[in-house]
Image 1: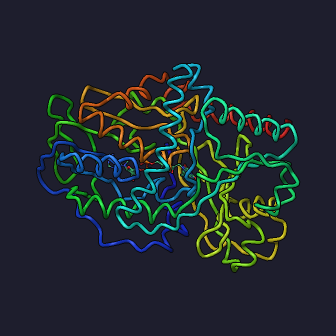
Image 2: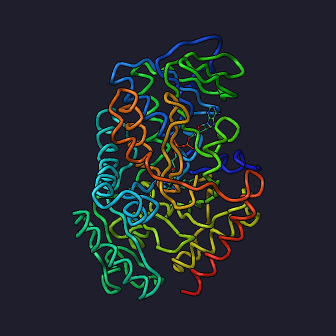
Image 3: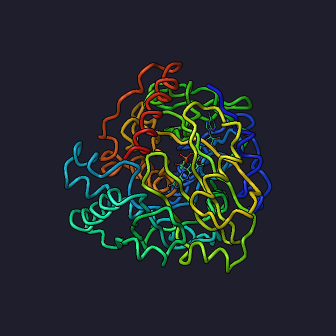
Length: 430
Ligand SMILES: Cc1cc2nc3c(=O)[nH]c(=O)nc-3n(C[C@H](O)[C@H](O)[C@H](O)COP(=O)(O)OP(=O)(O)OC[C@H]3O[C@@H](n4cnc5c(N)ncnc54)[C@H](O)[C@@H]3O)c2cc1C
């Protein structure tokens, strides 16, 4: 499988706007801990923080740098809910359990506030998220979904918007209607992730960067190996997103890496930026291959979209991203793109998250399906709870059933490319 990761990270607006503190040293020699966490994204760091708060000793191993993965590169949209419809959860777990899952997605946003306030993480939080639909039929579907959320889940913070109301939030001719959620919002994800790492280190989590885990020996005391040393632990947590393949082949079969890309415009100036998005809400459309965008704190438009199901970065990426941006905001024809980058999301077949255990003391979190900025934090908390003996909330998610992607490790990508071509066509026709 081919990942052009360095090309994707080098030119990120986030890297350019979030100073990195001195790096954490690689693991050297033998170490012991109650818990070894693999992966320095929000999932791993969040678990590490909560485990320390409960008194466990923690070593966190990160192959590159903390925040190198999706957590430091994403669209910054911190949204309630899951990547899948709640009906997917209802069908598997029933309405009452689906209600508990929904409540945890709300808690995930509260947790972001709790953490940025408790640890003084300045990450440019901005409240407000807008979902937009490209035609009348999709607007009706979106409004019906809002009504269901209020009726079945008691979530009344989202307001359906008719076409005439859209200019309050967005100046684009593309959309026929929308829904504004005042509780969700957006932030600078790399600043947030680096802040979590700083808080974890201050709480005596031993973080080691440049420490790729090559293998582990399972057992009552798993031993986790890197090139420079090993960690003996009682519990192991795998939070490596799409990169774990050979480390956890049995769970990796259920996720597929999908590339998604973001372009950052040149600074627009406050007045022009807020002429586009007067409430500064994060925006996502309801298309299967969606556009998602928002303003940065320094008034750039960060525009995400364009996916790659083949793990190859599209060669015309900056141009293609600009074309999509102009499709939404033709008034930006004179504005250039300063940065572009991307990363991989870990999608499951049904887009529901996939949490579980590979052994009684080996936990994994995956399958956030492009909707993980907030939920990874909560998921890390659930692992900490489970290790501490209160596994009910973790096990609620772990009950969700998932199917392997067809085709095995080498064939699942071409199979998905075909499937996605069909979904794109369906988007265009409906
Ligand atoms: C371009 C993009 C846009 C997105 N936009 C949004 C959005 O707007 N809203 C939203 O909710 N979600 C979004 N997502 C998804 C979201 O970013 C992810 O779900 C979330 O950040 C995943 O966090 P994580 O901790 O699971 O993984 P990551 O942040 O990817 O961290 C995994 C870490 O594990 C490390 N690792 C892997 N293997 C090993 C190993 N063997 N040894 C040691 N370390 C290892 C990696 O180096 C990496 O740093 C987006 C994702 C991308 C890529």
